Figure (cartoon, rainbow, N blue to C red):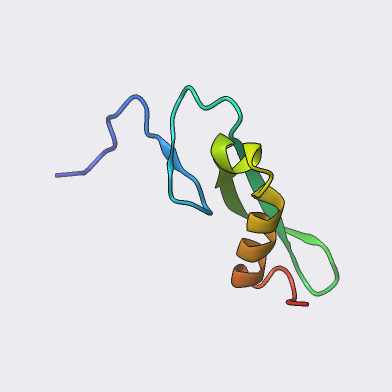
Length: 78
């Protein structure tokens, strides 16, 4: 039997804190980071990061994005 997702709403999770992002969290954002090859040309692949409103209200989303980008290898450590 095929397993299909039949839920009408599947909540997302914050990439930095693993908190659930509910439907009422209007301060949350989802960012797609595009992958590029050695020449800097977009390869039609991307990685998605979601940040909850709690993180953004505390002003920590920039630091969280930098940390996640370093972990994924998109950003060199300083």
